[in-house]
Image 1 (cartoon, rainbow, N blue to C red):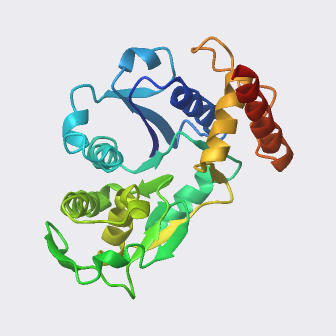
Image 2: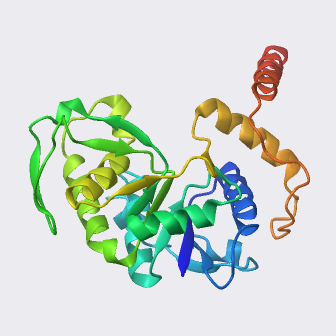
Length: 268
C-alpha cells in the first residue's frame, strides 16, 4: 500500500486551491486496493468531507518548523511521521499536477529505492565545503563538493525502511540552520538535507517529472492562482474535476501578465 500525502497549513486560499486541484488530478489514477491519500493539516475540519485520511498537526507546527526558523522543515517532519504511522509514503507538494502513469512510476521507483522530483544540482551549496557533522544513523557526514547533490523535493517518496534516512535528513537540516548559507540556497535546505541523506545511506533516488508537474516558478504560481480561482467549483467540498484543465501555455501566461500590468496602471 502506498500512501500519497499532502501537507496543508496556514490560511492561504491560493495554497488550498492548489492542493484541491492536485488531489483531483491524482485521484483519477488511484487504485483503492493499492493507494490511499492522507492530508496532514492544522485545520482538520476543512477536509472532513473529503475521502482522505486526516492527520492533525495543530499544535505541532512550532516544533516541526524549528520554532519558525525554517518552514520547509515541516515537510521532512511530516514525511517521518507518515512513514512510521502509515508505511510507504509519497509526499506531494500542493503546487503539482498528476498525469497518467504516475502511481505505476512511483511503485517501480520505490521497489529500487526512493523518489524525488528531478535532479537539480551537484555541489548545491559551495559554502558548505569542509562542513562535517555526526548524524544519528549514518554517523559521520561530510559535505563533499564532488559528490554532494540536490534533487527537487516537489515529490519525496520513501518506504517504511527509510525512516532512519529521514531522521538523518532532519538532523542535517537542524545542523545546517546554524550555519551561514547563501541567500539563493537558504530556501532549499530541506532538499539538500534529504538528497544528501539518501546519498550517504546509499539509497538510489529515482526521478519523476514526466507524469508529475511541479509548477514552483513564481510566474507559473501566480498564473495558476488566477486560473484555479476561476475553474474550480466554488463549493470547497465539491470534488468534481473541472472541465478545463490547468495548463501553462506561454500565450496564456503572457496574457495574464499583461492583464495584471494593465490592472495596476488603471488602479494608480
